[in-house]
Length: 355
Image (cartoon, rainbow, N blue to C red; front, side):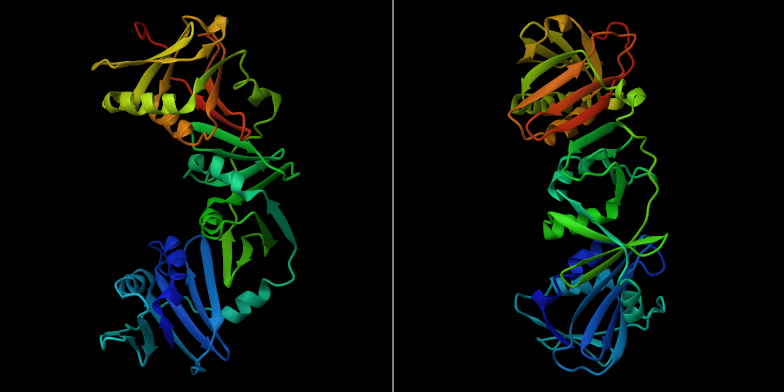
């Protein structure tokens, strides 16, 4: 088998799904008649890439380490040739690297692909909108997904709840976070997802075949009245996005030295004052349009969470929503009105002398 370096660029996507499981960093290459199949199986994702057997290579199988093979390829010069032959990886400058006899999952790749055909499917659209909320996909089981709720994409990472409108006319559905690298790599607007069985969904894109383990969802339906009341507020503030981002980054230099990286948002007439909760004291003042009901009200926020939110807002102005009631308010809301995206951050408990 001979490949140009550039023909093996698809392995970059394989490396995204490597892990420390038994087979999670093992690349099986199978030559079968007129096709060559590359296969890898990690804990939650099986990935196959198929290409034509252009040189009529004899049927054969090799098992390599994905990370090691990719590292060697990246060290090749542009337009280099990589050959796999007689248990060696051979480069066009004469270098040879022996392929160890690695054990791996015994899999019939053709049968795996055949079983994925003619299954029920659904199409998820407007996928670029996921960029607005993917930063807040959680890592824990039940939160490591993008959920579709009432025509919105939703994510939650235990600190920030984010949702953005989409054209999907769906009450509830979900996408595992493992599909996100595929969306980014191919810049997809829509994706057809096949229901293989109770354990896996199947996706096919440009010679790739992905089998994604289905995940549970623990995010409650956020548009139920009892959940909505936690982030529905009475008053608002309008503020320049770039100015807020600049000030947050600067005050973060001091605030991140303190426990939980807390700062105070104090709302005043025509301005907001940002101030660290603990010493060393740092203070920023920036112009804002503030509802009169919010004058002299303050909220204690987590600076790192707010920075993450503001980094996702592309509109010139941010709308901040909050209710001026220390005893009742538990969240602060940031809205990107133009992109129809909402970000809800928890508030810290109020403390004496926080102002």
